[in-house]
Image (cartoon, rainbow, N blue to C red; front, side, top):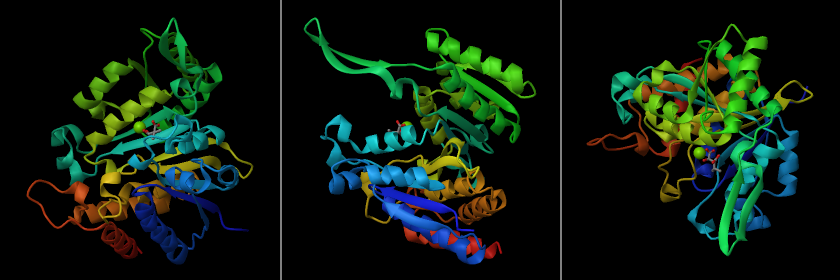
Length: 368
Ligand code: IPM
Ligand code: MG
């Protein structure tokens, strides 16, 4: 049998730097755990635009549809700020999500004990936090038609359409309920059913799916604005949060900051199962391309490495190896190794991106 295939799209800014550390981790699992992957690499975002004049070449899109999983670094940068909207680096990412039909975006917000003091919230509010945001990723205001800017009565009008079909809500709700069963069995669904019809439908369909197939899971509903407030008031009340594309974008950044640093947070974007039973999948850190520190060796590779751990768990059914990697990272943090984003006032001597990679590899070795 051939090895499972990975397509690495390192992208822009710190993407290539953090991805270099992921490649070392991938090699380690190949050498030491007999988990070998066929790895190929290609361009996305500004890096693709520079070569192909588009943020994602058709050949790259075709490859992404063929592999077992895509690992993405980050896209975007100030160099591309003035590009036409259709050419912007972000369009490459959105095209991947849409054409791979990655409707379920898993964004865990976990507070590592060693980092509980880095949060802008008090330690006891966030210590031990472990929530999972399930964000719908292929519909809603990000993709709804009609959209655009046109002139009406001599003034410009900007239009985006917040649109959800029943089947779109149904499938992402199922993925949230399935996940909850493997966690603490609770789902809180967030929308704005008080002002939006699409929110009323969202709530109805989530209730229907729940009653039909997941009545054993504890389900609650919250208006998304209240949800944002509850996330900073008492985040530990949540287990799985289910929400749409736009609210999910906002709520997941909010949840991310509870954990202290964006440099720590991975994500998985999953679609329907392929012929081999694996879901279509793309894994990426939640952080962006961080142009301000690009090329300085300062970036924290942890989020990108944790995204590979998610790939081990969700694409390759290697939950034990994913846990091994997560534990290795936890022990590195517990030993006080810190990249620059994890420095507190008065602390000095952060480790570099590569040194963080070294420490994680050493911890993996120690786990054998
Ligand atoms: C995210 C990002 C993207 C989004 C951008 C880069 C298009 O903010 O993954 O959360 O808005 O979805
Ligand atoms: Mg975002």
